[in-house]
Image (cartoon, rainbow, N blue to C red; front, side, top):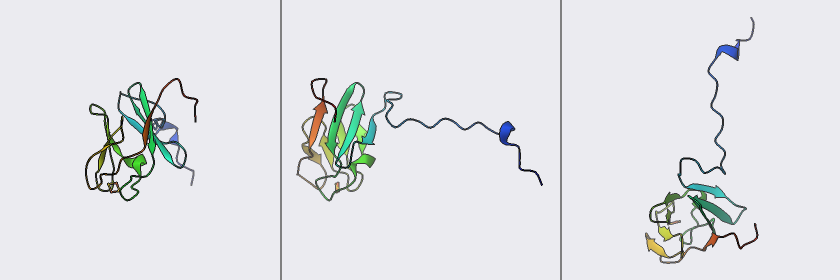
Length: 107
Ligand code: FES
């Protein structure tokens, strides 16, 4: 029995690069072991990879691009991306954040 001919099958869509900013949607990606890179439009932030509450993995966080907030996937604390201040949720501890500017060397 011959192997099925896959040349006529559907062409899979190319994988979406994790570093690309597509459709203007925020991008959250790992930036080493300890940080997460958050891209919102032309702005870029590096934040701690672990939530200050109980170390939720912020690489899976949701980002509100209009309010510049990041929300932990574990217990839903949200933090200001500009200051790191805890805005809601079970923790009052701030998140380590910094905005990446052209003045800083790449990490
Ligand atoms: S671990 Fe992030 S809110 Fe609890």
